[in-house]
Length: 133
Image 1: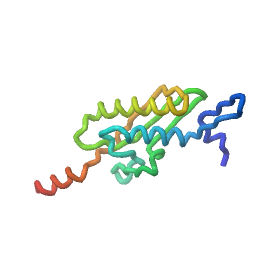
Image 2: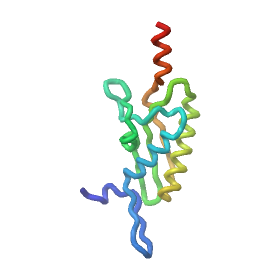
Image 3: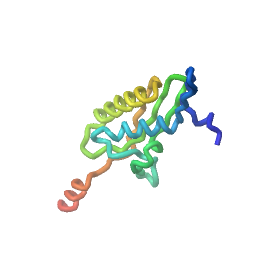
Image 4: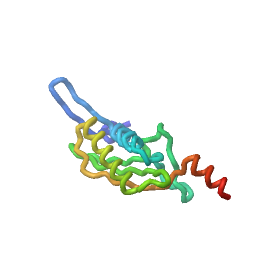
């Protein structure tokens, strides 16, 4: 595996070098996104017209990271919970992801694009639908 294609930030100091893999930034972004109330999970894409929800082990797969020498742009593919105000949740995700990446990596996050891939329903909502019918 060629590590140069998978390195995001390579910093050298008088003690040695620090290298951060792009997948690490993706995991940070995924974790920060799922911390926000109203986010049901990350999306792995559309399968048969339905958004595939990923578990906690696959957080980086719902994230696309593009990194320059000192800046990063992030695309997040998320599933929101039914009943939330999507613009508010998206803004909170953007702010939390930006804060987490900048704090943990030192990269300047210049862009965070949120792609809503679906709506997740809680078990309570499904139970109500069953009782109504």
